[in-house]
Length: 224
Image (cartoon, rainbow, N blue to C red):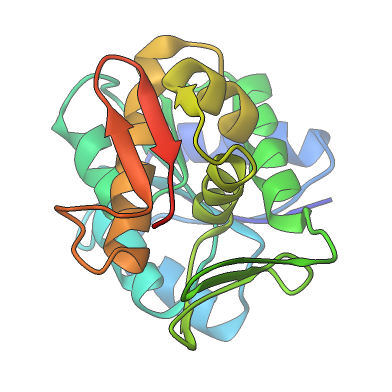
C-alpha cells in the first residue's frame, strides 16, 4: 500500500481515480487545489504525489517546483495534452513522470509502483569517481563532500549510467530500465532527467564532464 496525495480539481475525475487507486490497495488523500496539497505535504508527507497540471490558483507545476525546493518526494503529473509545453516544463520542474488524460487507472497504478520500486531500491557499497561519491546503502550522493539531493528517479538514472561506465546507453534502454516504459515518444523523460542531474553534479552543466551526450544515440557516463 502506498500513501498517495492526489490533486485534481475536476470532482468526477478525482473521485474516479481515488476509487480506482483505492481498489488497487493504495491509501489515497485527495484535494482540489495546490494550496491544500502544499499544506498536506507540510503536515503529513505522502509517499508520492499525483498532481493535475491545470489547477486553479497554484497549478501542479508550481506545486512541484515548491516541493522540489525542500523535498525529494516523487511526483507524477497529470496532463491533458501529451505533446505540449506542459510536459516539458513539468519535467524541468522536477516531476518524475507524467500520465496523459484521460487517465487509465491501471497505467497510473503501474507508474506509481515503478516509482516506488525505484525509491525503495538500495545496495550496500559506495562508488567513487574523484569528488563524486555515491553511497548506495544510504542512497546518498556527495560532490566534494557536499551532499547532492537527487529524486529517486534521478538517482536511479544516475546509477544506471554509472553501472555502465564508458558505454553508450540509448534512450529506449534507459526508459525501460528506469521508468519501465517502452514508448520511445517518452524519451523526453530521459533528456529532462539528465539535464536535472547535470545541474546538480556537473561543475559546468553546459560542459559536462560526467554525463556525455552521444548525438543520435543516448548518453555515456565517462568520469574524468
